[in-house]
Length: 113
Length: 113
Picture 1 (cartoon, chains in turn yellow, orange):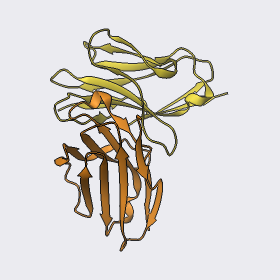
Picture 2 (cartoon, helix red, strand yellow):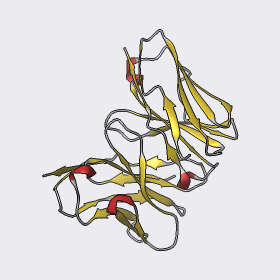
Picture 3 (cartoon, helix red, strand yellow):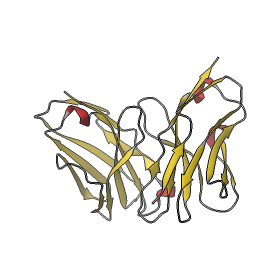
């Protein structure tokens, strides 16, 4: 079985500062890893995903994440955040066999002017 | 068309009411999903349909009854709900076992009084 741990429930940051949202996973098999963003009262939007290949994954809105197998991590980064990045961010994992995603508890990113 | 459309966007119902949530996609996907998301929590899988057959039921109470009448449509019938069932209900679709290409709808915000 897989599990996902998002180490920070809330991350406050000032506008134009860099940010890192942390995600660690647990699995005995190869996994797919995802980051989703959710704005208030909306559905989930895929930011980026790691399936295989290059461990540095670039996504939408200037976000990127690095898959680190030895540390079982998939941290999300952005070099300079905007007010509009304020949202809830979910890390998710799948082994592809059950056809579903396991989500972490989420990290609320608050960008302050 | 890469949209998953959910209706209604908001629903308020009493504990004795019967209501239905609707989800539609026209991407040719043959897997459709219902997730439940309580406030400030991650989405939790409820049901998965593959090729119009129920393939996963995550021990959901019988007051929630899913239906997949065709490959484009997914319903969730609600009856005798409890206030603790108030949540955002998210629909998603993909090809079977292809969660790396999962598309989410914007959800139905349900309040049970």
